[in-house]
Length: 374
Image 1: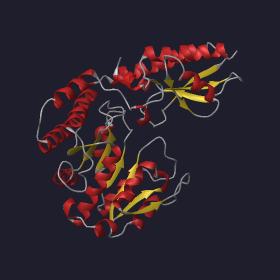
Image 2: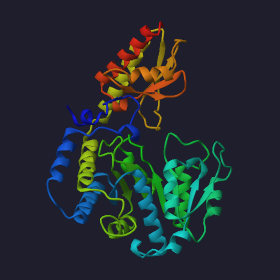
Image 3: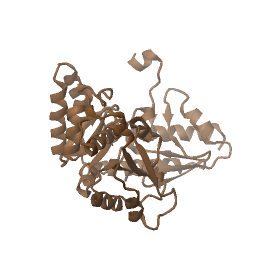
Image 4: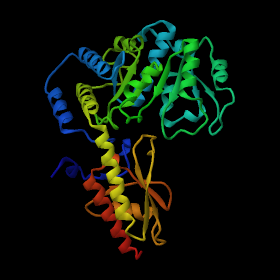
């Protein structure tokens, strides 16, 4: 009996993707071995955080890097660094009025449940543009919003945002003119692997990635890469040092885990991996289209805007909908979660499945066709 079985928590085949709700991604045996090695000794966490950050910065062609306990924590800490830099104080010397007198520019179409960190820092947010409305003068709009209290511009890269925000290039142009740092939330924007350094080359000051999505690191890990002068502020006053970032604890296991995962990610054959995803899409379409119950087709990019194909499945059997289908997939020994679009459509994502698992998912989907009379 495994530990999940002991607790009565069923194991799943994840056909949805790297969703936090289902555990993000799976770590490799090498990452797990490195974490186990890290857990077996005491170390100075301040030194480990700095050394690992330096190594990751070199590997990813950035000035500096800082490991966090997730991407949302990375956004929060990046805001702290920007506020600290603007007021010319170390984090530990910031006062309530420093936060309240700080403004962050962002775009309405970039609002999300994760940006609650703005409220937690008590900064004032200046919202620009409108969702699904392209501004006539985006550069002028940004510049008009800048004041002496502007500490940063926040930008979200994601497949879930609506149109309406200026491009990242225009945002960077305005920020550079007014010497304002840009904080880029790119939590799920891997692949492509080049994003680890391309945003910095474009001029982004701080970029945040999740460690538990496509990097296949610990789920409770994240990464900030960017300017040395900003990240140095975190090394001085954030975890494991006491202060505003102290509660965002990242252990030696997470630090080593994401370091190990990044090394492997950089060494991965991403062309072969892409070919494997395409093979899974082809297999699923071939199997499901053999039945009159479904119509399956390649969909691109995926839900997060990553350059990875997925399978869009339309239910053609009138006796079946996605509510019934979801219940069926969670019944029995093999339990499967899929991404529901509406009552007639769902997605299968190869990012979190092997070819063998893709076949198992399709086999179970074909059985439901027989049982519903399709």
